[in-house]
Image (cartoon, rainbow, N blue to C red; front, side):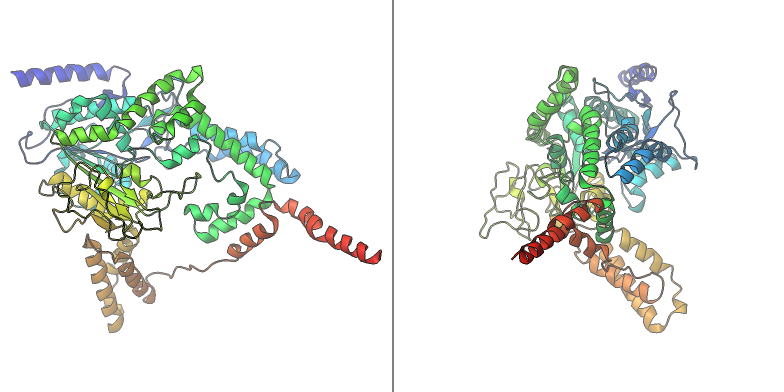
Length: 612
């Protein structure tokens, strides 16, 4: 009777939510939808994905999804790109600015383009998104998701590529808008977990916060401490627990690419967003405008993006490091009209300061907490602090590891360095928590016995590291791995990897008709394929790149793949040459520089000689 009454109350509450304005209204409480009815060995697991790993789409005024010409929903993250609108706003000012070599409306046009594209996720002064966007949510397990819904989930995290012993009716995906209201999302996550318990019949769940998802989980621990009774395991994957130095730099005006010297001499290449040849080509093409015009236009566009979009988003503020928050909030949130935003961001700032203590409470309450961190991949060079501490391209190691100490990228700890052993959670003081490459001292992190480290792993490619995913999938389905020493398949320190190229090569190799090959080529393909598959499956192997190169070489030799041209093009020489002679100046400024630095001195010297 008590259980039935509880379900009845849940259904009534759900019905009330369905007619309310709260977005959590789509989470419908139901009879347990699992075969086990809550009695099996597995705990349901909620994936809390990272930045941009949820489907957020544009709608009309009635809330219906807008479709593109291919009949697909139009993404609103990170922006709503309308090429026709961009051309309409920017074409004339760009042409006039090119013709006159002056800023003839270009800066204003770029500002309007930013407002048009990124404004789709703009929040009001209450930190609520007020535009036509909708998050595609999944208020039921993977087992009930449609083929289309699973394609969305797999496009962000490729569950379809890996086996998990966890039944799909125990696996859930909590989606959200990365620009959304952070307090609201933390409360939605709490309610979502209650829904999962109701649907599955289990009294506890696992949660897997990934990257930005870590900020939502951290907020929930602070705002809804009653959640501790509902958790069995927490498995963090590269969590943004103390922000990203990128956001801290952007919010404190420490941006690098508005520095003309850097913009024209290595910014794009060092960002690793583009290959070397393309980056240097763009540097040359950018000189079609004077540097003050281009940099001025870029600076204005950045100001609109930061001031009007990012700093109104409490989710963006949640990714600002605690050390950077006071000065940034003073700059952007001190005016009376932003008082309600600041009230909410101050609340998360306190959660950030309490983060380690709250995670320690999880441990003290018997909840198993695990973590995956990545290191030795320098921060993307958007801000001035891009190479001042160890990172994984997006987030500094201190944030993702809960306090591990490390040498900077490309460096090692001092000779004779001894581990600090400052964590209260190491079960054995004889444990060696210094990484084999002498870069990381994990003993200063909160969970040294429960944190795995991947060297050289790029943050935004985490979902393409099969070892990380297999570790997480095993942890959520099994309880025999209790720490980093439990299973040799999952060593504490490992190498980063991106398996997409080798997976593609393996697929192509398997499709080859070996009867058309010579005996030598067929044997070479068979052997390289076997090594590639074995290396891919080996969770402790560090030879993936070599195996991939060997298999690719065979595929190139037999004509299945084309060799990739990695040689430099002419622009890799022209761009540095232009910078050495003309600095960041544009093409139109170069003649004047030549006259001032070459011709005038020559005439002056000649006149001096003739006058003697």
